[in-house]
Length: 93
Image 1 (cartoon, rainbow, N blue to C red):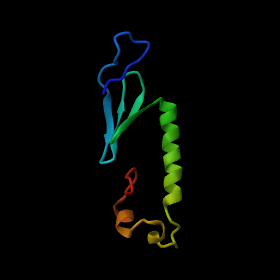
Image 2 (tube, helix red, strand yellow; image 1 turned 30 degrees about the horizontal axis):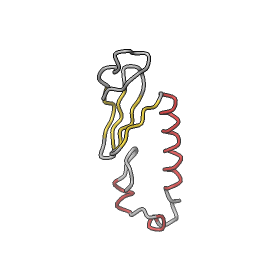
Image 3 (cartoon, one colour; image 1 turned 90 degrees about the vertical axis):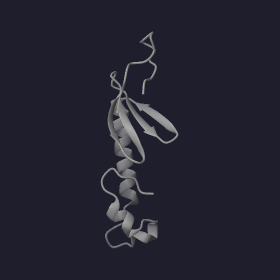
């Protein structure tokens, strides 16, 4: 996916490099260094530093969602099947 850039009068930067994708969305890298997070109904362009901060934020949130080892997962809405099937980087539904 191309995006516009004010320093390039011709508009787009060329094709983006796909970095990762799954059922939730995809991430691509523009030749200018901007990362784009593509989700169902929107795309979010981020500078590399902002992308790293978003990664930290989502990791913190995920840590808060994970129940303590002694708590029943069903109490926070996570089933045992979802816990077993969710690996690193996978979304819980």
